Image 1 (cartoon, rainbow over the protein chains, first blue to last red):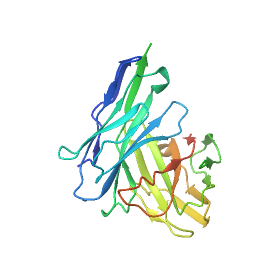
Image 2: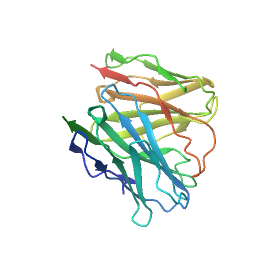
Image 3: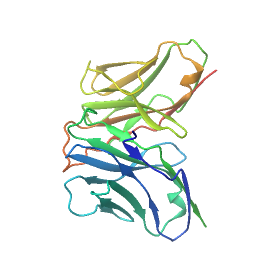
Length: 117
Length: 117
């Protein structure tokens, strides 16, 4: 079974609108972390936002927020006021702190976001 | 700023050649990682290292080996390159330890696009 599922291979959003990128995860570890990374066409992976499993508040970083619903095991990324420069691949990832992955990241397959002018 | 550099952005090699991909980080990080990225498959972990001269297999180690003789440098070796190793290779590093209160995010290099003909 996949540990990280991103169900949207590709998405379009109009410039200045908000967009939600979906991510669901599967773990039995009580302590874990969830990450979102952005990968522009240049190829480098850029860390955007982090949510720890014990965090009570949803994480926010500028125009990025993480909608963390622990019971549903979802960690959706919300980008407000989309900009043309947001066009990129977006990856959701999970780190299990006690599981067999030794604290390494497990990545989803990614969502390609295209922002239309 | 953390910097992770990779020796080449683009590389073209012939089937059967021995290929070295070099990665250097300047933040004194204990942990270093090699991933390959293929369309529709996301990032898959090849090998990682949590200390000098230590290495652990990731999810897809077959056909690859690694070397970590110095803390800042982690090399990926393709002993006999094959066409199915044509891919994007990403190196990453991370500081030691992990707990859900802290992100300890991985920092990525710019990637190497390897083509094996």
